[in-house]
Image 1 (cartoon, rainbow, N blue to C red):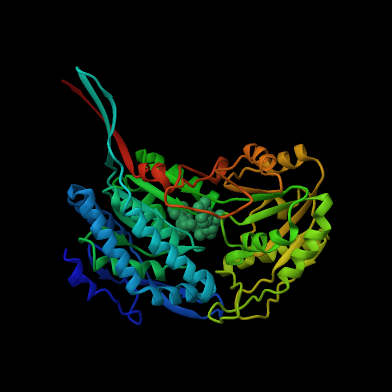
Image 2: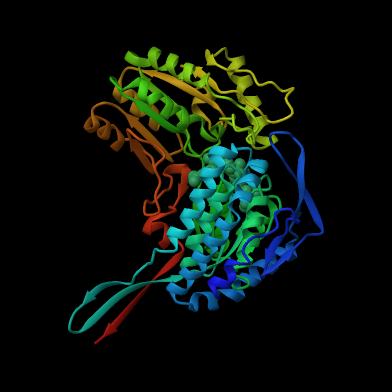
Length: 484
Ligand code: NAD
């Protein structure tokens, strides 16, 4: 590979057809499915629906390419992945526009951030390396633990952050010497097909394969004996199916699943400063975020002040088409999720819960638009407090007793992330230590990093992404012992 000559050839034609990447070739499928623009309800394009033979061919290609890819030095793989980050950069503006078109998120804010962040991630992960560990080195004996690649990784992604979550899997999979078969969500396949197409300009054939389709292609991947690991991001319900399917051949699995993250606001918190931060944490990406703040527990002494300021701030936000620069929050990404939200809104209405803002979805609009909705102190056992709505509706919950609010925050099968807010950092940390979640932020939220492991406790997942631990999950530990 000559990176310099590649640079001239990195732009791809975004007007061209959307094709899958199998064994270095761009291929169509006999069957197609519709991909919709969620802001208009119109079909953007019909995408290829991979046949079983095509999924088999993608896995076979990845399998054939893997030994050669793994035989390259770590540094050589880094060069390829860095060249790929350059190629993504060269196509960045088109990827952002496509992301807004198929996912809905605002082009000028969330979509740009997602793509920038994803490219940064690819570039940075390429710089990481898993060094051998010497556990014992005596005059007689050496014990060394090395990390070897697993083989072919099957990556399955959801529709809320399709570019970021896809590239979060691609980069660590490749740097550790594995090859890839990725299947994006049927709701947002286009960006992934495009970044697959870009990958074909950079990587040896068979290293990156992308197949699109519905859910059954996911099943074929998770059951396949030549897939060594499944890296899955999606709902808890599907995660359980993936785990069951993977058991057939004892595949390694990383499951990044749903959440119902609590935010606990302690007495004396700075309401004015907190309101815009928690608004973004709860409603960013229109609430379609695994780690969105999904239950906001506010101490009784500041509850009314917080609610009123939260509502006033929310009223300054515009829901609309993500291509419009005045839009703060885009539509719900798909009709299935929109239907679930209609059901959740109906439940809030039926039960007569107090709504501080919003509460009614205008179904006459052509896109999947849902208004920002703030539910004022609903009961603990209400659906809006217990379920993950995955949309712009959030309950505020009044609390007085610290022991009780910690118990309430933990009273869920989810354990993805949480946040605690208060003027006394030590007191807030003490609360954080008692929250059952993979990540707990104190007086900040939604910080991620290449070297920071991220994963859910309880039914929010298994294993982690990112950090040294995340990279290790793409490898086997291999112990060597040498007699001197
Ligand atoms: P989903 O589980 O419906 O689908 C995710 C992916 O799995 C899609 O590509 C889908 O086609 C595929 N799939 C469906 N059935 C399958 C099966 N039986 N076998 C294999 N693959 C199958 O999830 P979604 O609705 O796309 O995403 C929303 C969910 O994802 C939310 O619960 C959210 O919290 C979660 N999520 C979690 C994280 C995290 O990092 N923890 C990040 C983003 C989203």
